[in-house]
Image (cartoon, rainbow, N blue to C red; front, side):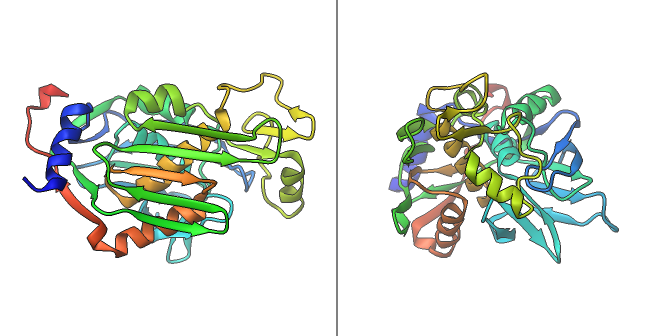
Length: 309
């Protein structure tokens, strides 16, 4: 048996993988403010047919333009992940994309009446619970997977991210900040729906007070507050409730990474190893990965009885 396929067979046996595509049972909705725009936005997530993928619809614009959530549509990664097409954008999608990917939802239509996804509480937790409330339905079509065949690495200054062959989808992440509250944090997880929900989804975005003030001065982070971010000053954490996890900071970086990698359009069987990486480097890696076809192979999951899921 081909070594790649053999590894895939091991992955299926060793991890409770979702081998059939999934969507929602019923539509769900929420509203909130955009982190950077400060604008109020209402969002509806609807079920979609097989092979539809994740698509965003701007209902506030004429002709309701649609943008596919795919790496080829990424147009900006400076402060968040923004996709766009023909002058239309959808911004700050990474937390919602992480929730969809973390729960194994392949097909959904996301309708929005503004350009930025609501920040909610700064994590993917509210989206995760919202999607579970809508119910997850197994569909008839089998999933395709990206199997990482050869190592691929991207580096910029002291930042690094790599995709390595593995029998499962896992992420190893290290962050290093010159602040006593954060310091050096490392974590490795297998990306499964249960681990994502329990260990990653509730980790909030974070920033330093002086950076927040700077961003607001130049028209960004208008919707940011202690209600939707962990804010750190020179003395420590400003949020009265403290942290949700002892190492919440590195967990949130893993959350962002899951959201970013979901823009490949299908699940990965591989090991992501990141050191101080962020949206820009994550997306640079994905674009290079797509171009280097010798580094990957797509494999369709084997047919199995749907009742086994």
